[in-house]
Image (cartoon, rainbow, N blue to C red; front, side):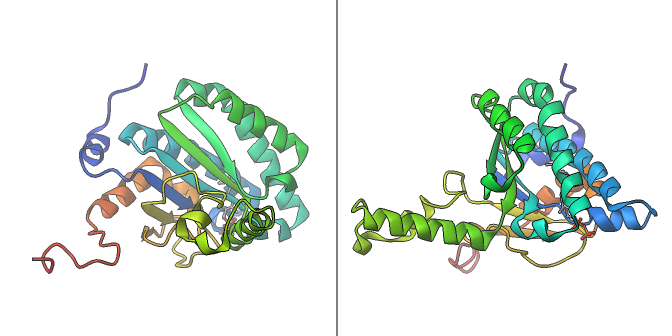
Length: 252
Ligand code: FPP
């Protein structure tokens, strides 16, 4: 049985809940280092925050939660760390299956997925298929993902469509680009959170974050958990979104 909402969850849920929250889960390595542990221990603890934040996002009524789990540039990390991260991903995709289905969470993935090892790709495809009808939250994993790589892939699709005659160059507009982005089928992120105190984009959602609200928090990802997530959504709820227009007071 699902426990009732906590007072904090209920308060956040009563406000304007972002449809789509995206997260740069940073600081696993520093979390581990500060405890004298190997970096992989930080990633393992980070996977617990993934579980907690997905659950919280669903409970307050977010529709989409996007997590930057492995960047296109992360392949350049030491082989041990890459293998450890792939192992953790595989473990998550296999072990969380029942819990995800029970919680009605659909799994999706974006990125250069062909680069993933087959022991990750297999469980990922199986979980995508098995959760395709789950509707309470869509959890999008960015894997082997980069914002520039996403734009380059979109440009290749545009070129192919022009070449085969299905797209007239005069009709190339924002909508034509959006429809060919890896993330094009999801609503744009309302809120992007980055943990660990770093203030930069790091090649995340370069196209679709154009009007996102950003919240930077000092906590490392393994310490973030549900409480950090609810605090970040609260901060979002205090912002005024203007999308390039004037604000409520000036608008007269
Ligand atoms: C960034 O921290 C984090 C990552 C590159 C990996 C994120 C992976 C997980 C949270 C675990 C597995 C994911 C899922 C979806 C189960 P960092 O290592 O760059 O931290 P640092 O900047 O302190 O070194």
